[in-house]
Length: 639
Ligand code: RUQ
Ligand code: CUA
Ligand code: CA
Image 1 (tube, rainbow, N blue to C red):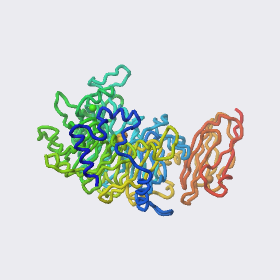
Image 2 (image 1 turned 30 degrees about the vertical axis):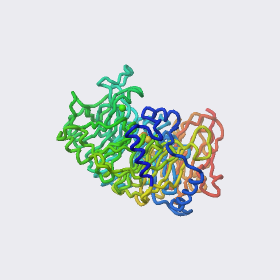
Image 3 (image 1 turned 135 degrees about the vertical axis):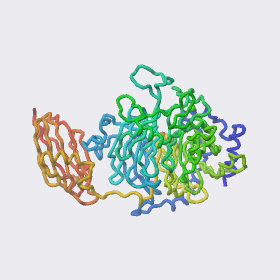
Image 4 (image 1 turned 45 degrees about the vertical axis):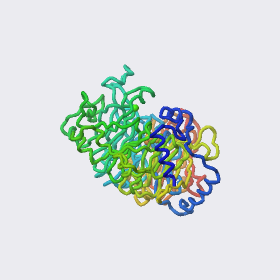
């Protein structure tokens, strides 16, 4: 098949740097991005050839009406701020989980329960999710949590997978822009590893722009996954981009593209090599236990210094030089290798985890001694994923391709042996960022499906005006050859995704009445002497009015209530329906109040009754033949 073609490409890059896409050198990368990705590689498809391939693929991905998908997909919603649940292989969107955004349907960001989760950061209405990851026990998904970063406002959130709601959120102190996020795999997800991308001065008090000063740095952030509190932070040289963890529980590794500590594009591309930074977690834990840490600013979380001092490594970190502005770093499912993608270099760097102990015990002369391979793959390598059969799949942003390559063969080639480690290059449409093979980041990597998140869709869908959807493509990797089987338009901007087998995710059908998600609301009601499952009562407490009611299709427990203009009204509704899928809503017209109340859930919302008059409230989730009639009225008397 395309082995020869691939080889020619690799040779061409190695040699003259001139091939069919030779006009796009490294310096043109940024140009290509700015020009909206003019570099489409050999992606010359015809409608006819595409249609033929699609017909063959159709049978593979067809999930008939009433049938269920094999896998759950969890997609980041990018700067839309949410997480999306997908079915694979149908690529149908099942549900959205609002996290860092405000959601009108569920009332996320509006209800008291969601505001408690959002905490101080409830003042932000935006977020920028990149990396959703599922908690693990012994390197396998355990179905408990999903964690997601917010680059925009430096947060990390946790989603409970049993109810598919965000239940905790943490603003990481003293850093800017949480980007790379991965989880400890072994023995279990005790820690969330979160990279802060941008270097800032400390204290960041408005007195300087200077990044070269020793008080300007960023940190590697480690969060206690169960408590969702800071465990510790590590000061680093340079900046941090992506991260991953190994299968011993001992090491995490992050890419750094700004070893220059530069402030502009040219400066950030000055060095031929930046770093993969490796963190020795047990050593950091030991230092903190021994009280050998500092704190930064007002935050109480322990901080250790992982920077080099006078050219000497700290005990906590090692800096491995890798080319050039590296981006993704991905642990292979056999636990043997961290593979870092070169981005501005056409290579990936293979780091052997078996050599990391020696690296930290200073038994190696050169940190590059842990590098066992550096295959040339194509232009703009960003992320790598695995099929569990020894193959790696790397996205080539500039080439608009996925390259499939054999890891062990690439390692042999590094020793000088003549092997063609490149197995196939497949055009994708267009400019792929992340890719993700089914269960690839766990011991269960099964090599069935590969999702490719393409940043440009161009001509693949009906035109939608200047703003285009992205294109999330599905590739069958179960055979020897990669086959593109589905195009999926997606709204801004799925950065990354994970796939889990459907038996690994177990959700509740209706809420438990003692669920922690609304426990505080229940406790507040108890103070008013209210039994939420049965009581319908209005309590006037000075300028505060608390309305407690039940909902059961198609009626609210309270049909009308009266308040005074300027009162702060809190409506607390308990859905006493026990029927799966019978969700009610509550919308108070002209007050910006809207929320979901699923079976056996309690939800509450607070607003100011600032407009005298009669205001209808109604159920917003279609629940019954008489759903339209599920209404009530609030009378606001003039102050
Ligand atoms: S990073 S396109 Cu935000 Cu995951 Cu690589
Ligand atoms: Cu209750 Cu619609
Ligand atoms: Ca750089």
